Image (tube, rainbow, N blue to C red):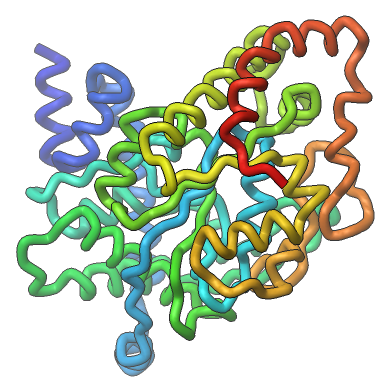
Length: 375
């Protein structure tokens, strides 16, 4: 009886889309889950109200100069600590790409759950489900990921402007589809990013990184249903180099606190790469992290061909909004744009750890290497 009450309450306040996503992920919508996501919704609405005073002349100027974004999404996804952030930063600044500057977090209730939007919900509820809360912090404090030196990059992004642009993109639109909503979201996102140095020009893809999203089969199926013209890029990292990085990362918490648990997750990610490649063939590309680091130009030239864009030297330098950025590493920062030291993480393993990782991963690693692009 109580569960029925909170499900009805969630449907009324959060909408059909969020309620179904919560039920699918958690199995039910109880009081704790309802209160948690209702608080999230209220925080978002509070932020919109606090920053809602956009002068009409300024808004009309933004609307008139709006760059519509209807291009497909090239998604980078695999288990964390495999080079997704690096590849995303290498795509940044390319004149034929809209490169999402952070991790893409439109998933709900977790970032790695592809959003399923109910067409009966209002545009406001769609936006609240998709909204990436990080833009509030980054707009206020600057973007710092991977720097480790206290340096931040300016990120000018009024959330209320994105909200208004999103709603206006969908005004008077009939027979709205999931793709229409995501096109409106991407249009509102990149146009609300006011100091975006790469908004203009003809673009071929949006590029973005979301760890783990590609592991769930339903996610990948829904992604390609929304973006039948999309692409999926996955990076596989030698497990002997991957484990020390994953285990040492400050956000790992208890995910990778022992080798058995960690390599089980690495194996799962690797298995799904094979599955995705078999099912979606030429729309999926699997690369070795080690090749990205040691053969950067060859890999990026291949990816330029894969995405049907021109090769540009900016693909060889990790950047944020076209400004060079240090790698996001769980180890001490090293000199150079791309850190060759990431290829030697296995040297921190004991002989016993090295042997165990090989034993647990060698079969799956051998299988996935038959699917990777050879350089």
